[in-house]
Length: 305
Image 1 (cartoon, rainbow, N blue to C red):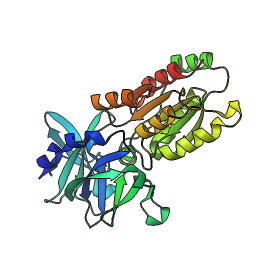
Image 2 (image 1 turned 30 degrees about the horizontal axis):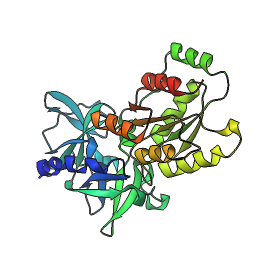
Image 3 (image 1 turned 180 degrees about the vertical axis):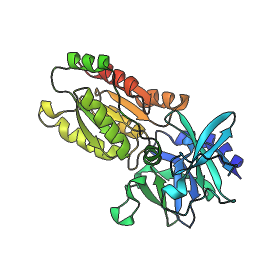
């Protein structure tokens, strides 16, 4: 079942840049459908034999040899509040690549790949009880589909510290004596927190938006206000509800008041495909998450003097 699913990924590449995304649907123990971007998926397997050390994080079901590389396997069901799948014989494993790292996620069943209109996805109301580990929901044939914020899950297992060299921090102090403002657009609370921390270390003012539509509205509002309130650089995620990073970049380039604004796309979706899309939509740079030194260097290069 898994191979035919992934063999069709190439047919979905044309969706990118048009605020549409291909999602791999899976389940964690009941009828609730969850989704993950197919471009983050390497392979779908039956649950392999896992090796586990007592010192592993409680959400890590174990590790296994994946094509010559030992990778961790996270029990996504347990992370989302479902009964653990570590011992479930019928469980499936989704092998993913996020932010230049490879890991597996245990799920109960894998369904199919579907096209999703980004404009129809929205942040889940708090009353639904998903918490921070779901960053978008939408309806598919009347049924609710929830997009898992995998960055939140990975951060729980392996928190990343924002570390920046003294050399870069000193360069930032010298380069930007006046106020410089960066708009961070990302639907992940983990990512927004990391970026805000990074920009504080660079002595940059930071404002945040949770998706491309909110970010665009903020940019247009600030562009008509006092010059000191305007944004000097946009750092945006790519995969977001309402309006993705590609569509946001296109909208900025089509707006006479905003088109000269530098845009850096910052995403856990990496690879040659994204590099090509960055050029197509008119972004200035693409940086794969999360590389504080690389990102900080790019930000200092793109900010106007």
